[in-house]
Image (cartoon, rainbow, N blue to C red; front, top):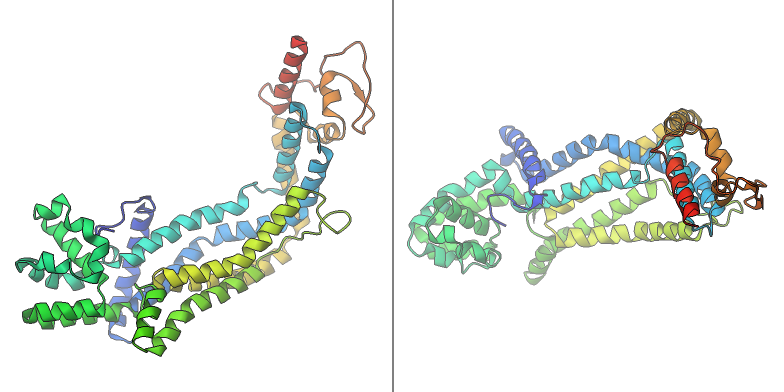
Length: 439
């Protein structure tokens, strides 16, 4: 990744740019307070504060998601009853009526079928963009970039420095930048950014070899490295390095304190994620009439898959936090702790809510919306209890889904009058009449 920020569509621009500005602002405030002169990691504290700000901004979505989970427990039996009523009916009329009834139930409870996915869809780009910000911190935090500028300018002025920079272990991931046309043309900004990229990911051995190669710059090299370590050190861990790499290098050097620190990040991530999952509202799989299941095989399978995902999530978070930069682990752990605290408070808030009043208000809105489409809500419930095939073919029904017989008005519709021509009822009728004319 080039220092001049990520160019990935959406994730790099504008999300990473916006998050980078927020991170830069937090960093500058902490820097002005003199936190960079303490033993605390200014980058680590910046990430924690950044996480709190992000999750507070997402709080309205979190509350909405939890309301969705609470209302879903009340809504699912009605959805399962609709699915059971139309089970085995594959004709267009039945499918359209089932969709209309399902839509009405969602409207009654004031939720969207995709309601539980909204927060995830918003958080995932933020997570990926945050990775770009943490991994390329000097590209987004101006004071971190300033640490490198003096040293890089002097290295560029030394003949052959570009060739030596490519021998450093951290240069492997930036090999394409050294062969880029802008680098070959002598673009100072591009060359400077490339040097900073390499030095930002350089190991202690790389910094030592740099000091040996350029003894005249040794004091500047050491001061730059010390400032970078001071920024990135979080309880002795390099926040820009993956715990896996820290673990491997610490194990080889018998630095068992760092070994424990590297393992603590993924372990804490798994633990906090496990607590977070346990605090979330759990769907009851035994919601059927007999208490043994939902009565719908597809619904039961989805419930089992959800439980499996809840079990796997802590393990996945541990793996991500072991392989991604430690700063991502700090973000992940802080986020899980904040979500857990939010969950406790939201659960108390939702438990005090008058759910019946919420449902009643949503039901009134749903009735008005349905009536705008040209049919009353009471009629929708009436038609849902009889055979749709009989209804649209003009046959009478016994109310149990069986045709009672046919009359001389075969092929005529019994759709209510004054129906909106754009409504589902009108479209179902149009399809039915077309089929009759073809016959």
